[in-house]
Image 1: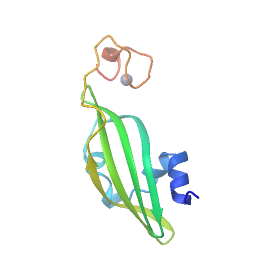
Image 2 (image 1 turned 120 degrees about the vertical axis):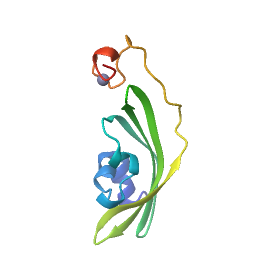
Image 3 (image 1 turned 90 degrees about the vertical axis):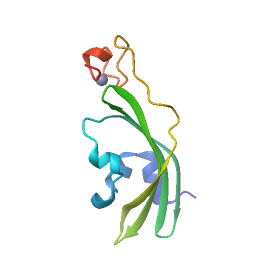
Image 4 (image 1 turned 45 degrees about the vertical axis):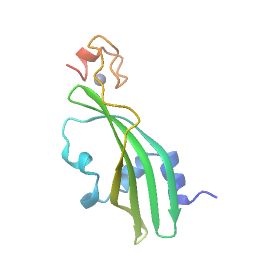
Length: 119
Ligand SMILES: [Zn+2]
């Protein structure tokens, strides 16, 4: 049977972001500016008593390029809440790439890249 925490995360990836402790958010998420999130994909989730690990890949647009953060994140349960503690960076499933200026924008706005995130 799937643990409750994993069930939440797998059904609603926003739940993962909500449980990141402010002091322990992945560095990129806290520091990078101008990021446009394209999607968060949960690859694996494992929970045992008061600890959980979640492997995710987040796709993002930064400075006109499509990139990804692939991380194995650790969480601990404290006073009934799951808090992010640290993460191990993994190799993203693709290398950073730059969309064609006239191609559809990867953010799915329906606009051309040059008129949207690549502008
Ligand atoms: Zn866009």
